[in-house]
Image 1 (cartoon, rainbow, N blue to C red):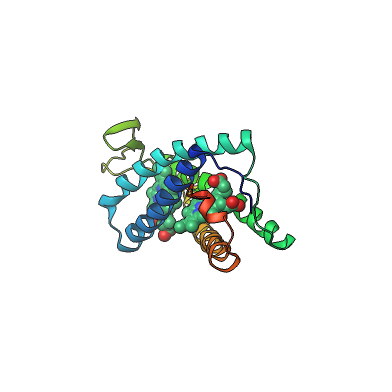
Image 2: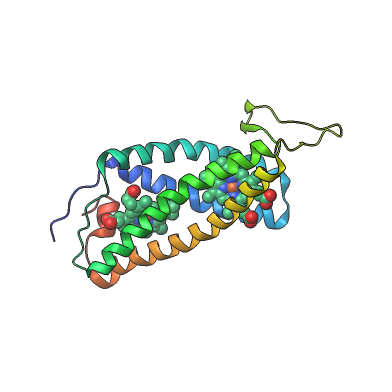
Length: 180
Ligand code: HEM
Ligand code: HEM
C-alpha cells in the first residue's frame, strides 16, 4: 500500500518523547517506591527539558494535524487509534504540568540541574514549606493517576503498532522509522 511520508521532525519528536516518557515513568515509579530523594532533582530536570520538546510536538500537531492512517482496518480501529493518540499527547502535557505545579506549590522550587528557575521556599527547619498544600496534593494526585493512565495508553498503542506490523503486515510502523 502507498504510504504518506512522516517528516524527519515528526519521527525525531515521536521517538525522543517516547523514550523520555518511558524513562521518566520508570524513574518516577522507582524513586517514589524506594523514597530515593536524591533522584527527584534528576527526574524533575529531565521532565522539564522533555516538556520543551513536548511543546514543539504539540505545535507541530496543531499546525499539521495527525499523520493520515495508511491501514485498511475496520473503522472502530481508526477511532480507537485516534482516541489513544489524543490520550498520549494529552498525557505528555498533563504529566510535566502537574509535576511542575506539585514542585512549585510544595515549596521545592524549580531547577534544571544546576540552573535554578524558581527558588524554593525553605521553612524554619530548612525543609521546603508548602505555598499551597491543597494545590500541591491535588497536583501530586493528578501526576500519580495520569501516570497510570499513560501506562495503559502506551500498552494499547504499542500493541496496536505491533498488530499493524506483525498481523496486518502494513507500513504503519515502518513509516514511523522512515523505512516505508
Ligand atoms: C514529563 C513527563 C513526566 C513523567 C512521565 C513523570 C512520571 C512520574 C511518575 C510515574 C511518578 C511516580 C508517581 C507515583 O508513584 O505516585 C512521578 C513522580 C514525581 N514526579 Fe514526575 N513525571 C514527569 C515530569 C515531572 C516534572 C516536570 C516534575 C517537576 C518539575 C515532576 C515531579 C515529580 C515528583 C515531585 C514526583 C514524586 C511524587 C511523590 O511521590 O511525592 N515530574 N513522576
Ligand atoms: C516502542 C514504543 C512505541 C512504538 C512502537 C510506537 C509506534 C508508533 C507508530 C507506528 C505510530 C504511527 C501511527 C500512525 O501512523 O497512525 C505512532 C504514533 C504516535 N505515537 Fe507512538 N510508539 C511508541 C511509543 C510511544 C509513546 C511512549 C508515546 C507517548 C507517550 C507515543 C505517542 C504517539 C503519538 C501521539 C502518535 C501520533 C503521531 C505523533 O504525534 O507523532 N508513542 N507511534
